[in-house]
Length: 340
Image 1 (cartoon, rainbow, N blue to C red):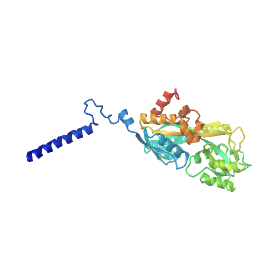
Image 2: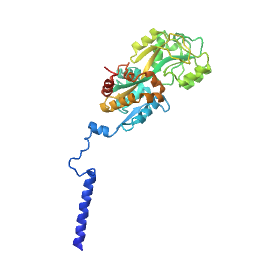
Image 3: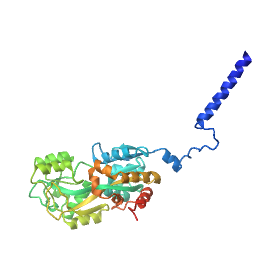
Image 4: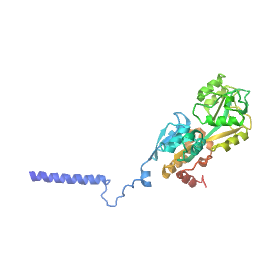
């Protein structure tokens, strides 16, 4: 009985070993079975979704909506975590690699790369790369005061550049200086736009100066309720000077069907809202990200309607600030003819 028990145990062990070997080999006994891709190889990268973070802004705002939609479309290719952020912060975190992607203004990226303005004490942010142009924020002056016609009329006025910390606190005073106005010539009231709109309704604020998308509901509601609502005039020489002195700014002759009244010609500088990536993100991942945005352009435009201003998909490659382009994005744009 002891010998029989011993044989049973030996046979059981042999069967267990065989079963384990079969499971490990993927239930294949063939010596020619394909081995798993080597770690770090392109095959391994595509077999397992890339894992990255994208810096956007606060919940409910357009950059967060854009990032969340891209994240949803990217499932299976890139596992994209959507992080709250800010215009400046997204350049800093993308440069450091804390986030692999960021959405921000091209003007901010140009300041970051040169280490100027906000970044003067933070050093040059040289590890950011261009991926795609998304849409534009147009610089406009909003008022309901009939006597205020242009930016040159703002001596003695109360103005709002938006909440504290925005890039407008640099470019608005610069533009006003073109008209000979110093910071002592106008009163700056720091507040969120929603509060600024209420202050304008109550006569406690004269003007809001800021870059915003078109249309922009929070402002447009005021224009539809006040017949005096209009945009301050800016001449071409002023817009052109800003574009020449601040890389990333461009301008257009403003010709929108706007609920805010304005006299033509009106020239509007604009910031290109831009998707950037850390320079060390793999070419294959950025290629897939660029491809996704390009191929899902119509769907993205239906979610974030300002994207429709881009026009055709090839304009995603438009790079007015001359930010160095990520090789993965460059490869894709060349393949579809967006770059020569």
